[in-house]
Length: 220
Image 1 (cartoon, helix red, strand yellow):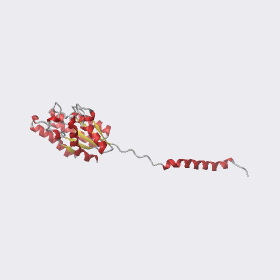
Image 2: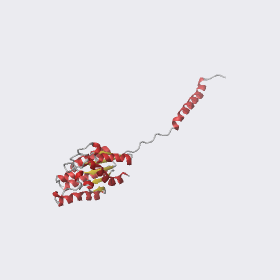
Image 3: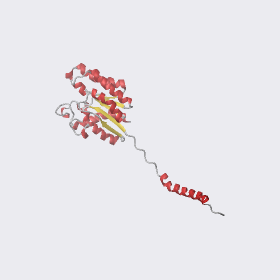
Image 4: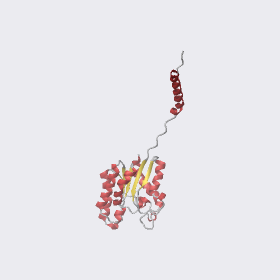
């Protein structure tokens, strides 16, 4: 019988292929790597009351919110886009870029205090807040609208209309509403800095505890 290299090569290739397959079996037996957990984002658009005015970045209520999220809501993070001195006009001009950049699941809108202190037209404040809510909902985010109250020296009509803006916008756009950010410390003079406008470091946990019940349902 005449030996043929071509005839012998076929069984050899089959044997090599079998050995290669057997060598790969342990890899196939390994469990697939776990998928990375989905990251959810809370975006806070506020003014100095949320930016942590005159304190370390880690001491403000928004930073404390980030710590609570890490402990109680794994997979959630907070992005603080608050700016001291911000008005609703400023927030309105930034909102589209912010929601497109961060793609938040929840947006906390805590603006309007500087509008009120400057006596800006209520109609403009309302329009700016409406634009912020609309842009947030357009990217699929839930919204927590955080209101503010003004000192009586601005007149009863203005102060009443200012508060009414938040209630009516919340109803119109079906958002969650926290009527007054500073409610737990409003009557405590010691809770404020020397300017009598900005809460102290010691007050920040109280603000977070006040915001949390309104925010937590939006994180489910």
